[in-house]
Image 1 (cartoon, rainbow over the protein chains, first blue to last red):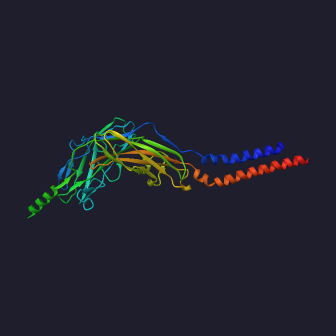
Image 2 (cartoon, rainbow over the protein chains, first blue to last red):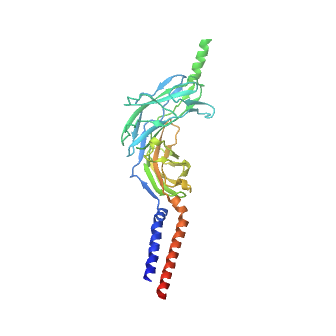
Image 3 (tube, rainbow over the protein chains, first blue to last red):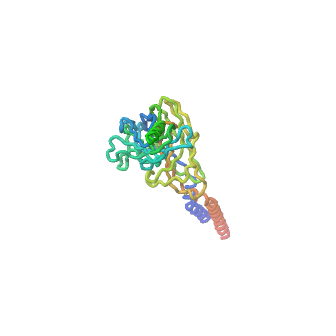
Length: 180
Length: 185
């Protein structure tokens, strides 16, 4: 009698010991963790460059050249920053005419160049803005931007060597940030 | 003749207008900056809220999208998120009044395929201010997603139940066998 009960209990314990890890994994609950109460934020004090009429194959600089716009880290976490550009499109008919954004900053027929330069960034100077997202403030050396940090920068535009006149062109430069 | 052509070209070029408007500031924030979902099984979904705080004096429209960062931008050990369409936003576009905040519901759904069990991924949730300005800002929230091995475990659940039942029946059989043997003795 006693031996029977013991053998039954042993069998159950043995079975549960094998099945427990699988059962535990199956019944695991989803956990969502938010890292602190930090918010991410950057702000720009200028978002437009009123150029007016432009000529072909001509270079334009913001004024002042490299302290035109100020980026401020307004959130409470360190950030990595990026910059990306796009083709300039004719406002009246975006599908009909565009200037392609150069990969190198050089211009061509219906190809325009855009650069940015950050005040204090003596190693890079003017950096081409391309359609591929790239570093805004170089953080490869561990230099992400801290809360309250500011960076002044300016833009340079090189118009296409040939362009169709009388058309209002529009483009956009996106500056993005992610927690470092 | 050459002088006339040059003049015509110059006039035409001067007519091109590039980016004319007024200067405005852009300022908004998103919280949290980073989220971690653990123990998500294939076939399951998890939801949470993002808060967008419009710090400007004017209302703005914000658009949300999932973005798959390059390897060197991801946290160490995190793989590329297989499909950005597994992340959905409700709403995908939201207008936030001046100096106020709004919440957006984010849902992450993993397809029920054992291929997606036991993975560690990173995907970025991009919040962009909709604007026709030359310069605009986009903020990314890091979302780290880890799936458990339950996908594989779940497929064995039936087998495990059968084994448990079989062992219990064997136990009962042994119990009654020994009991009967004891009575006969």
